[in-house]
Image (tube, rainbow, N blue to C red; front, side, top):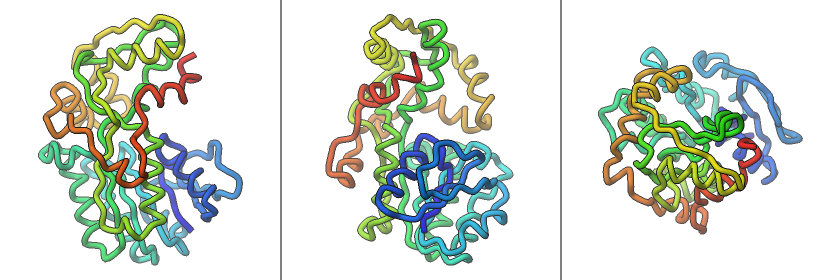
Length: 279
């Protein structure tokens, strides 16, 4: 049995489906059960209280660990989840980390994530670490304004990064959970091209077949919006990256293709699959 945390999210959802389709027994952990595949057991649990996960982990051979925003807060102890997994007999953990662990190692949220990576390496478990850059699905934050105003509002409109399709992350995660060849692997996951927010708005407009105007936010406006959903430290770290990506953050990684044997999906591919959210 494989436990997937964040199982209704942009990565956890397709990962849960992929594992179920591969014939694996899956326990999906999230706050709400939404769109669970047939045969998948859902458990509502709070990762901020790891002790509550103990019954979920009993009998599991592997764990996909995705840390939600509240687990990046200074008082959170996500490494406790890894210790609990080891104590309950889990043999393998695949951790969704962040590219910023190596590209911005001094950011507060990155220091915390590095500590989680270190705890995993020292746990005695089989492990793999996934380090994605920006997600293509972050564009879903624009869905309502596109639907109601025909507008995308974002900061740093002409600064791009190679955003990654969450479906690619999920497929790589499935490979790492199921294939021993990926034990000890650290994979940096990006899309195939650097793309700016203004260019993303154009791709959405092309897929809709109707105009979408771009409105550039100030950093302070963007931060105010982001901190409604994530801790201030994580918002600041993210804004530092998207305002002035360094060469490592602009690099197109070969790791998706190394694991999956195909090129990563483009932002255009993601939009085509997700366009219903913008109509």
